[in-house]
Length: 441
Image (cartoon, rainbow, N blue to C red):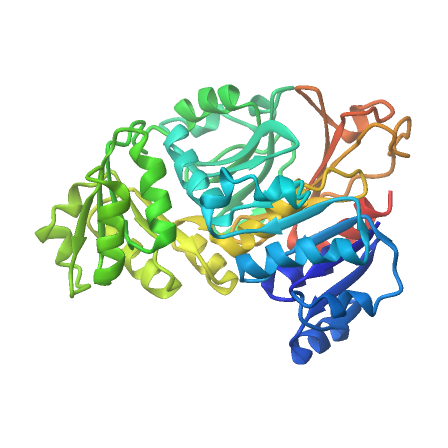
């Protein structure tokens, strides 16, 4: 495919890196140093210019592109670039990132012929809300290509020896990996489950729920009281989503403007507490120690970590932190914090899933960034249909086929069919080789 990306920030860079393995990519940005960094590491074409200036695109001798993706930090720039690109190039599909959820109900997107608009803050809020559907889950990852989930469960049960990977695996659920004593590995069928293991399960929601009831008898099965540290716009969207579940919610922030905005937006559904202090005594003074879950939703990852640690000291089992900087992702995980990716990383994954092409591979990092799941769907008309994927499966890589609602090991499946999804779970040491393999099938 021929792909143009407007914006070379965190999301644009990640998209360009992913697409560069098999597609022709052009990245547009007005910051020369940013484009130079891209060209140093990725084999793509860059274009120096303002994404809102029609002259930027007029300089290109290109008549047609398969995909235009606008991911600058400005809603106005993304919308305007999606409009003016049509004056110079025929675009088959447009995807843009937006912060303002006003556009959810606006007809502007249809008028601009934008097929997909990504709202990262809303997506992040929904990811937090999904933890309430699976109270015992350490994390929940959803995918647009299928109804199945990837859910991590910590083993805390009286007789873990009753479980092996073979006992847990069936056509509805597969164990994608285990973290044991801070080491991730792909287990064999006879691997015995131990207390303290963090199991990564992929499959149908109901099947995983049934397993989690026996695997974890310690984590609360119902969450009623929630404390949210942060009242910024993202935290407000999280609180609004959770308010639908009739929970008792308290929101705490030292920013008076955010607190006032939260009070107006949430209209009494949430108790908003403005405090000039951030000491741990807040847990006592405001009764936060009685919460079933705390969510650290500030924009500073270090402060989010501190709040989660303080909550654990008060005996709160379920602590969640929004991860804004990927450099802190693994540390949060190592500290036993449930990590929900922030808006920028979330936008990258959501865009990949909305492209809907057999030549695009979705990938999700998990286990604190030490493991990765690749997903490639076989669409109608794909050259993969009828193809038999063979070869020896490495010990540290798990390859599966999801066919309709059934999961098969790769060596069990027959020739690929339209609608099949190829899944590959691996540790990140194998990421580059697996990425190239699955992209070049």
